[in-house]
Length: 286
Image (cartoon, rainbow, N blue to C red; front, side, top):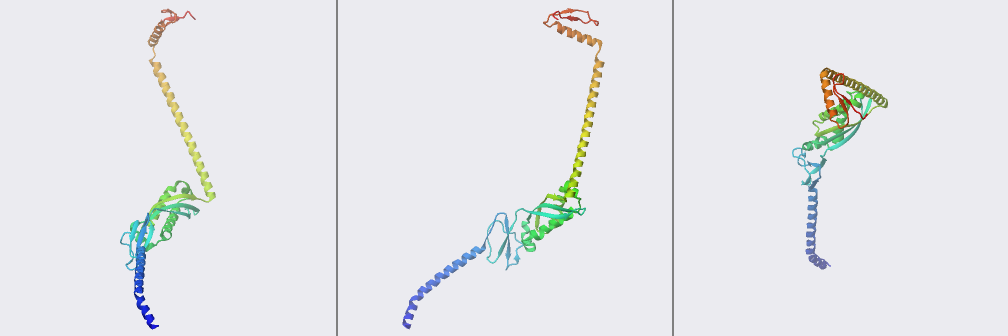
């Protein structure tokens, strides 16, 4: 029995050695494949990647972030991908006016992370920077700006100014927060119904007063136009009257008589029969 086992072992050893060698190669190939997969990072369009090196200083804030495309990194490093396109944050905020009235303001904030400082944003503010940094900055600036205006100004005449002031103050707050603010748009302002109705009535009355004033100005201009026109007609008549003399009238009468004499219609012309010596033209057909 021992002799059989010895002979079986001697015969089987080369096969087992060959099998172990093949298995080792397969295992090595699989490990290498997994290593390559974990080392490849694909950054999509409109994105950038921040590298975290656990054995090399943590978050890389010195070198530029990874740009779009495929990159090879060490398998023990990690990459955090950020959207670097312009994004929109829609906020509905309840704030107090100068008079202490509740006002609901809807705004859109256009922003994007600063690509050159993306590593610092990830290290010092984190991936949740919109909730932790951007929203508090916008709300704080909005409360400060709206508190300087009355409801009527907010609702009607000062909306663009308020929008610009919110943008300026928010950008000032975000100055060292690694976030780029592009624009703030005030979409809607909601006032308490009683205040809104009172403002609308006042605005309507103001528009009616402006319309009445416009009509008065229009009538005054029309009266002035007619006065100027009448003066022109009067001056014209005065000039014409002064320029007409007996000799001129006699000459014009002679010219008219000559033109009538040349007509083909039958007529009788009596020279010198008029009071002023002009010819008298008789038409026997009448």
